[in-house]
Image (cartoon, rainbow, N blue to C red; front, side, top):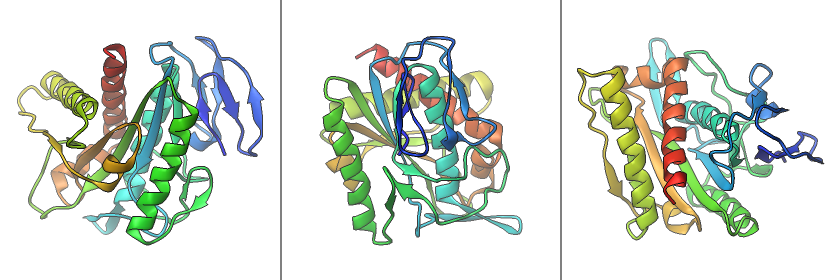
Length: 268
């Protein structure tokens, strides 16, 4: 079990080493892979915040599948890569981060086509079931157990998915919150506005059409912390695929989500 924390390093052999990190100090987290495992603390802007990052599907369920030339793209692999990039950026800001869906050997990958595998686990090291309800229940229980341990902190669940629609339909990143969660709606709206701001800056000739809406999804309904469900795009659409097959775009998406979370934490 490895808890990703700016101040605490839990190594891959499941033993804990207590060490309080300060700005400028570097820690190693093997889950990010050999080239990215060293993380330097850049600020304390998220000190006191705890994030539970849940990338969609995993294990026996690859999620949505798209075609990219002669290759297949799997939802769970791209959602996981963005999740790892997001986790790393949150740690740099001093946050306590738990990666709920986790792969023991993928790490952050820069390729356009990410190899599909089925060895993902659920935190701390549980086999992911094929049955959808059992799978969602498993990760919900993991989040809620950690929630009780972190009472008093600002706590948020971020779920990252890719959508599957008709081949010709391209969509912008959009966000779901639970119908009864005011804090979820605020966070989803803040994230959407962050993406709108970035699109205006980097793609000024392209209108951003991402949306915020409520859905009574299982994990949104049952997790104790405030939760937001993010859809990155249509995995079957060529234009949307550019948002996640290019490593720089995956990194930008993670960066924008991190900035939106930082703003939400600051405004708490």
